[in-house]
Length: 248
Image (tube, rainbow, N blue to C red; front, side, top):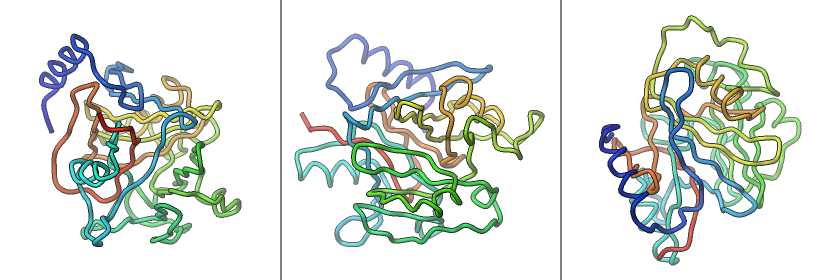
């Protein structure tokens, strides 16, 4: 992952030069003593989707490979993040739907790790709308998602922090997540600094005004946001979530 100083330099260059529209408004934000990158998306205007495998069945794994695939259609990534937890072979841990095709079932039981720290949830994209739903509410409603990824834990549930989050926790990681505001605006966030779950949840509830928000992952969290000079590198990922724009 590139350093914060390098990111800042790229961001300064971006402000000094004309840049294309990247399909989302991304900006830095300081909250409760930590630094974050925030990307705000109107799903009525910007297409949000998930990617996991190429047409040949291989796992895409990187922002560059998604861009290569989109380039054939004259399109490109606007902004993107890792899009859900995955096994060692990069299969999604939880429910996964891409272009209307379900490749992993919904998991409603508790279990080990952050994913099993109930309540967890699902980020569901349906047409030009998106929502974050707690898993058992999702199971009851069964919305017809075009794209969906299940991960966890929930960060904010109907305006309340996850009940297991502790203000005095010492578990700190770079983390990323997604929340949806009451008006349908989608907000992606990634921390530049290691933060606790409690701190990250309060970012979404108090700083970003999202009554429902979902943890995507930690430690492996990465962001692609050209407007911020961000193209985070690392080991290949599982699912990737992002916006699509027309290539220049």
